[in-house]
Length: 119
Image 1 (cartoon, rainbow, N blue to C red):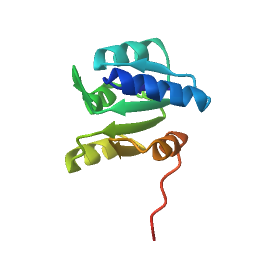
Image 2: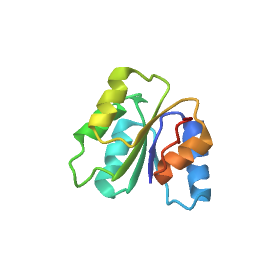
Image 3: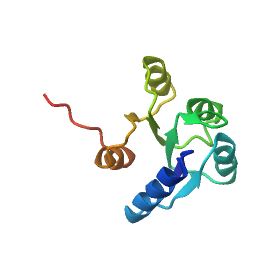
Image 4: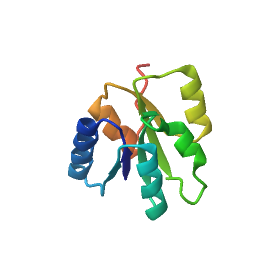
């Protein structure tokens, strides 16, 4: 799993959380670092922040060829817009989660479980 989050405290917290959940975790704090990690290794899961100091997380995802694109991507953002949601869906993102993060919902999203509607 690759976690791309520019906030150092949140990045470390998420890494610890998913290590406890049994994942092998690599982290990156910027678009450039993430591209470097994605060039070195393949990841099944990508946890991706949209706003990064050196670019847009969705642009990073769009730039990846099929071989390097993780099978499962969960996006997190404090800046949710209809445009971001639509673009994420077009890029095959599994879920877009708002910040501040609901950790139980985040874990379920990473595991591939959709939240049930309150019907």
